[in-house]
Structures are given as C-alpha cells and as structure tokens.
Length: 196
Image 1 (cartoon, rainbow, N blue to C red):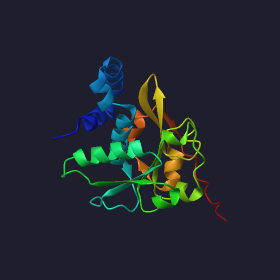
Image 2: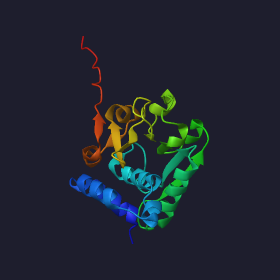
Image 3: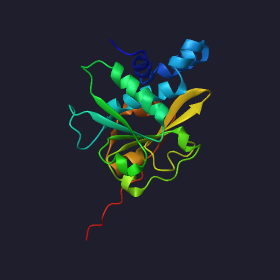
C-alpha cells in the first residue's frame, strides 16, 4: 500500500499537479494535517521521489540508494520514517545522519537542510564533482553548487534545479522533474577542443 506522501509527490510530477498541489495546500487545515504534511515531511517525500528521475553513472538499479543528511536530525528522521513505510517491492534506501561532508563519500544523495541557516557555504569541489545528488534548502542553494534546492513560494514547497551542477556531477535529470521545477538553471556549453 502506498504512503500518502508518495501519492502527493507522484501527483506533483504530473503536468496538472502544480495547480492541484496549490489548491490542496491552501485548503488543508487542522492539527493532524499540519503534523503529517509539515514542511519537513513534504521535503522528505520529494527527496525520495527525486531519485526516480535521476540517473547515476555507476549505481546498480537493484542496489540500495544511500541518502545522507548533514546536520538535520529532523529531516533524517522524516526520511527514515518514509523509507520504513515503503513497500518492500520498491527500491531500497539507506538513510543516515552525518556531521561532515567527508562522510558522504559512499552516498548517492546528500541533503543539507535549513538548520545550516538561510544560506549555504559553497560546496567543496570534491562534492560538486562527485556523482552525488546534492539537495539544499537555502536562499542560495544553487549558487552554492547544489543540484536541487527547495524554496518556499506562497507557503508551498517548491524546488529549483541546476543542470550545470548535474552535468558536473555526471547525473542525468529526467524531463518530468525539470517540468515541475519553478526554475531550471541551464548548463554551460562544454568548450570543444579546436581541431588542428
């Protein structure tokens, strides 16, 4: 049985979902709804859904995807709860909290949350150039080198994507994910070598 947050995330990636999600979030009310569909819970659902639209150069489809969360225990807890509620037939995930970027070496996804403040320090080259889907939640997330950055627009969780950062990391980003983004930062053309 599918998790309610998975269903919301699936709907969000269809062409008509932005309008449906906007309507749903604007009319949702009540303590239970606020707890279940908190900002962190919605972001966690999106993080898991993003992985369906990203291709890594050397990850076997049957291998568990490793998600690491830098200094954000709330997000790590939300992700772990979602992973545990998923059907065993779906792709497996491993979630763990980390305290520094060097611990992200064997992961496929790195989430740097809002607990790091409204802005994010530029990601080191070793992170930007690795096959790591970097996701932030900051005003300058894409400028810092992230591939996906969450933004709150009209009290709704939205996201933006940097194709340049994805290209540097060697990751493929599906068109469905790009069509749902509020902004897509284009990739820079690769300089070609001149022929003699």
